[in-house]
Image (tube, rainbow, N blue to C red; front, side, top):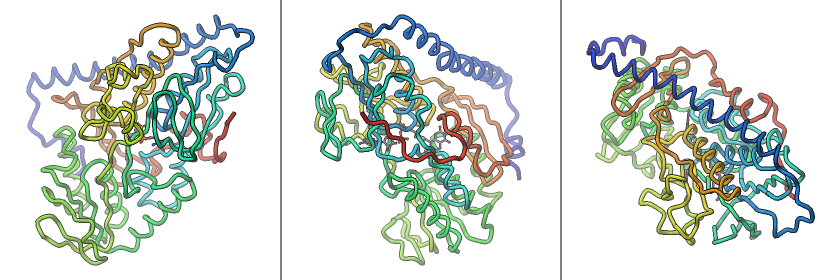
Length: 446
Ligand SMILES: Cc1cc2nc3c(=O)[nH]c(=O)nc-3n(C[C@H](O)[C@H](O)[C@H](O)COP(=O)(O)OP(=O)(O)OC[C@H]3O[C@@H](n4cnc5c(N)ncnc54)[C@H](O)[C@@H]3O)c2cc1C
């Protein structure tokens, strides 16, 4: 049964539902226009305005230079850095320091697919380029390939021991997962990441009984891809809740369940896997049930990467490990007004964190820093918008459903897809890189 049919067999919509859906559709269009206006038109105008009136003061000393440190350069930190680099006056008064351990931008969206499908792994690692960052005067943007261990009041301490002073700080460290793939690459270099993806592809290819733990997006995408590519293997997905994709709309949950039936993936709900019980032949569930398993893939366990703030502001770390922030994305501690937190690590996102939210929060943090530098109070705030919740979930190699959901009403768009690489060339272009040309590790250290 196709997803389109699956959605059509649901009960007919009432008039009220039809009206709500029409309103939702109009909001979708408005959201698109407003997002484009905010991110492109308004920003370009404000950058030009700033450049027009900026003049370089004479005899600048080091003490006159304001340093903005950005920790982490994925969706959130990258966009914050890009906005600062293109919007701050190029007068030599501002220095941006980006600290990121990864050699390349890790494009997480394609990890589950490239864990299964061979030959595309190089596309998941996008080189950082000078496209946006070399626009200012020499040394305006400094790129340090390292990891921040600890944040202190006015400095960050790197793994190398180096200390970097900051006037403003953006913490955009996202999430980590101990097991690495399929949620994170599990290392800092492109070659190692590609090697690990190939290793996972080989494990799946060799296996007879694949067990996937975790019925969120990563687990669902990986399980459906594996079964679609290798229909003769047994693929089981185990999830601790009552439905796969339980944090999403009921229509998406149903579409996911239908895809599992269509492909023949076995679904085990309300159970957890004990990873330590995997012995190469079987694996044991929380109920004691044993499953045949010669390939176990854990898609659970992502945690916010908030450890670096544990010394300076432990009281801002929530039970879930996120960092509590004000609506302006300043950390929730009045003694640290120049410290901003954005993206997956911030306790400021909607039901489901995603890259759109992370990037938008990076923009907001950058905008507020620009305001503060100009002597104005930070006033841009992050408010969850229903359009933030969009997700395109792949359900096998050539199908997906795109979901818009406001917590009550949903819009679902079932799609037929033809690009095994999930059109990730678009992400390369958006980051100023030529698909799929690796230009190596970006360095621009003063
Ligand atoms: C498998 C998978 C598929 C996904 N698919 C989608 C999708 O299709 N669409 C979508 O919108 N979202 C998707 N997401 C969610 C999306 O990837 C995240 O919401 C997004 O990556 C969050 O961005 P971020 O910048 O906040 O954090 P992250 O992407 O986690 O990046 C954090 C960055 O900070 C760096 N860092 C961490 N600690 C330190 C430190 N101490 N010092 C310096 N740097 C540090 C890391 O190296 C990393 O580059 C997916 C996620 C996963 C796991």
